[in-house]
Length: 127
Image (cartoon, rainbow, N blue to C red; front, side, top):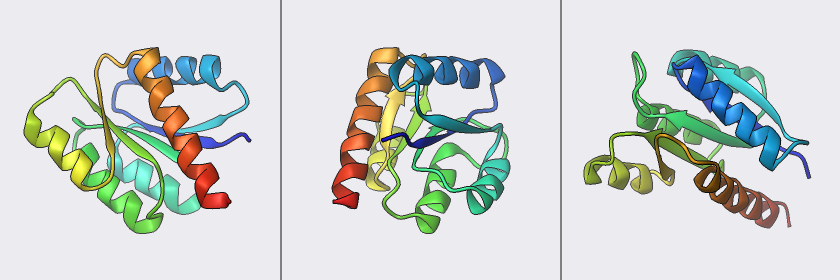
């Protein structure tokens, strides 16, 4: 079943890289893109999405704050927070709010594992 992925990153290159990997892994999925948390939240309120990939370090609110906002809108949404900052505090905070933590640079293998888990969670929720 095709799903819709929300990609949020202030780096256009990072968004393009995630979009390319998505096209390779799940060519029938569609995507939404935002360059910051405010733009993403506005988009999320207007357009339904199924899965989200969120950069941690962005101007304004960070990816963990955005994740909490998105989960308030859609509590069961599979989310991943992506960062080159692997501090235990950030990884732990991501897990505490129910998001997966992925390291930057994002590998296709790690991204694929997250998306597989997201599909499994979505299908269990729809069963």
